[in-house]
Image (tube, rainbow, N blue to C red; front, side):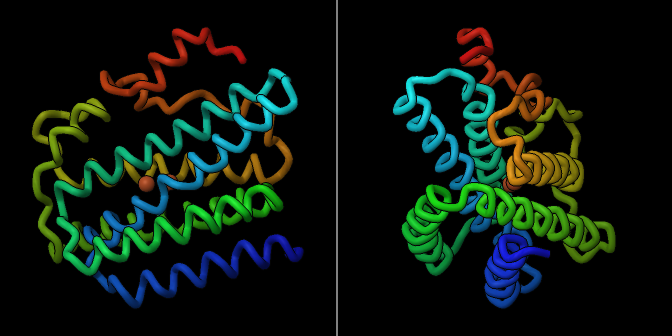
Length: 222
Ligand SMILES: [Fe+2]
Ligand SMILES: [Fe+2]
């Protein structure tokens, strides 16, 4: 582990500690609040690379920008699903406001100076998200949390069966988080401006995903 790894890992453990203390086993609430944070890094990084492309007047950044903005969009959709499952209380709403104000600025400055470490940190964040959705699934499987019907928005977005349950939705969300973890690791290890992957499979299935419209209109180049 080099210094960058240690810092990225340390930051992740720091945030994880607060999430564990604050939410304990309230996984629905944990998901709502953390998805409001998860939607930030892709937007910050996508915006910064977009601005870099403008400053340098160079092409070649398009696939990376679209991947990052698609990540932010995907996290925003996760939030919309979980808001159906758990409504944040007043304290959590205040926390979301404070966290967004702090985290946006923190992540922006961090990203400008240390983009690879920033991607590594998001890689670790996403790995934590995978493990916390796995715990959420285990709570449902053991009957401690009711496996309620999945929100209609998630059924449409992931093309799930009409009688899909919360557990089906969480499996899809967890697969998205794994994808984010992989993409951010590749960006952290030097493939920052190469074509990193195909767009999210679920975006193609989603009638509402604007990134797809954008991709076909833009012809996938840039
Ligand atoms: Fe997410
Ligand atoms: Fe994610």
